Amino acid sequence: MEQKHPLPPFTLETAKQKIQLAEDAWNSQNPEKVSMAYSIDSEWRNRSQFVNGREEIRNFLSGKWDQELEYKLKKEYWAHSDNRIAVRFEYEYHTPEGNWFRAYGNENWEFDNNGLMTQRFASINDVAIKEEDRKL
Image 1 (cartoon, rainbow, N blue to C red):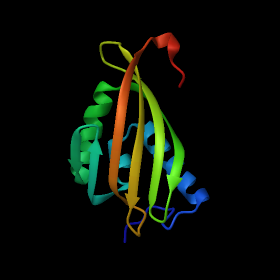
Image 2: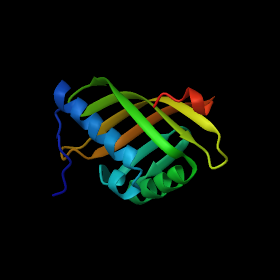
Image 3: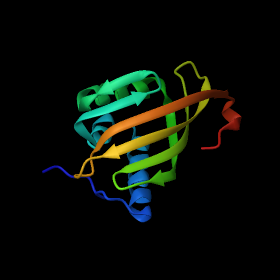
Image 4: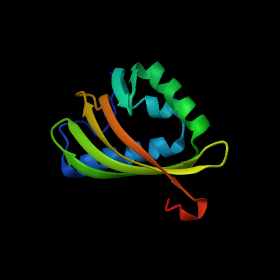
């Protein structure tokens, strides 16, 4: 059986560990690696877009990182319960045209007993920045 440790129920320590693992995976910009943290039938809301299942997640992430270059993400613990974790985050990137952005947001995650994320709900806002104003 496929598992992604740490497994729920989460403690403060294991919730923070899960967040760091997610941050590291997303910063790899490897859609295959990232998608493996999600259940086969995972449901996402990413801004106004709905994504369902690993194949759609991989396709979504491939398109994302084709347009969000030099992507760098930082996630922070917000709260957790038995099988849920809430994070806030910011990330920076530039478009192929060279325009820089910083995105701010919140995510709510729900996991199955095997530690795979079954639901991810992300609210995200982008702010245009100058390259010299980058923090990450």
